[in-house]
Amino acid sequence: MLAANLSCENLSTAVSNTFDGEHPCCMCKAIAAAKKSEKKSEAVSSNLKMEYPPVAETLNLFPPTQFDLLPQQNFAADWFASPPPLPPPRSFFV
Image 1 (tube, rainbow, N blue to C red):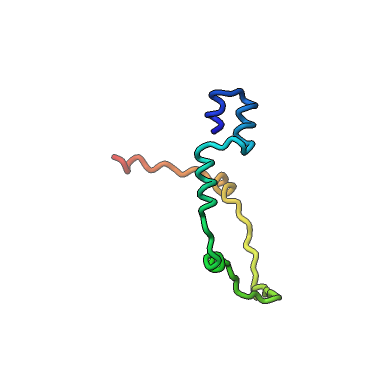
Image 2: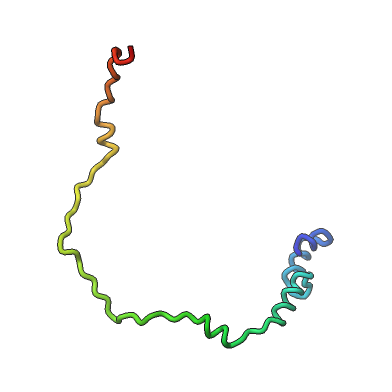
């Protein structure tokens, strides 16, 4: 609708006419008519109501019986510290 209004009006007038609600386009009129004709039943709205199971008031968390910290390893440092692989013997390719 804004693009259609811009083709025949300046920017400020086109924006105000687009969003003021007094100048609806064909699509806006069709949407408004569909909303008016839409009938909502009470049965449908009650079926869509979400129900959650009851939750205990207190939540008990228990720590593990054994907890071991693993040593930290820097794999990048290990990779850079190792020497480059040796080339294969030349007699292997002959």
